[in-house]
Length: 324
Ligand code: UDP
Image 1 (cartoon, rainbow, N blue to C red):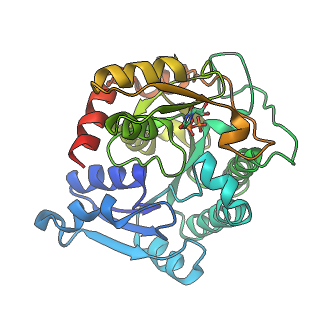
Image 2 (image 1 turned 180 degrees about the vertical axis):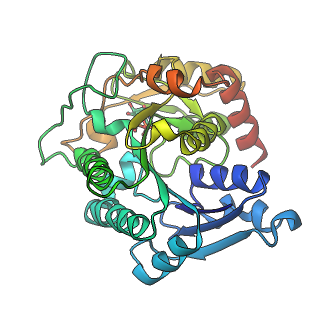
Image 3 (image 1 turned 135 degrees about the vertical axis):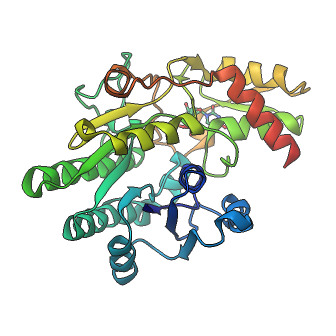
């Protein structure tokens, strides 16, 4: 089978590429290296087993001719390419909106043209600022005003979902949408704001761990290999087509507790430093206080359950970052 992964040099995309290569598939990736990196795929390019099965294109997904060729060649498409990371979105607002809306529209148009199956990686950001838990796929959505640019990411991804579902309704496109909650694992970088690599890097340098706000905000974290397994299983299941699925972990933790555990696990001498949001971001930043997925829908369809708990994930990430 030939698989196209847009954003294949990104953190999750590169793990997905590896999983498909290990299954014996041919993998084509396209990535503009805006947040992805050649370091993420170096081990795949250097592996002689994948010499004839791994094809890398460094380009933007907005390049119509290349996307036309790649979509034509491949049997299925994972659309992972997106501007991601709260810090990245706030610093690159216009470019992020353009990539996330025009890029997805083009992927969908081409998959429809060639009748190829596609999985769109969406995000738990689309739920907006709910306080209740768990968040389920049919929940209403609450955003802040358009002056608060954080929500531009959620709104763009929501528009991607509508467009994908409209292609399914109108043209019968075989498309599945997955809403990703915070995903972590080796090779994720803290450069674009992601909390665990930031905390681990700070702890390993014995620097203060920068907990934003009062640290009571909570998240759940999913191990990247659990996510790639879920994606591959969603692609195999007929009943996943034309539908939306949360993919996430169930262990809720506050950022203050997370910082404490990381300090303890890494044997660090770091302290915790509470940073007001207005010092960490622009003045009209809004955080999500709580974000916990309901995963009954994907569990009922696929039997999906994250296998790696937070404790194990943190051990893996600390070990990996210590070596790096
Ligand atoms: N966060 C933090 N310190 C950091 C980076 C992030 O306290 O150095 C917090 C952030 O405010 C949010 C949570 O950690 O409440 C998760 O942030 P991340 O950017 O990883 O993902 P998000 O869930 O916001 O998309």
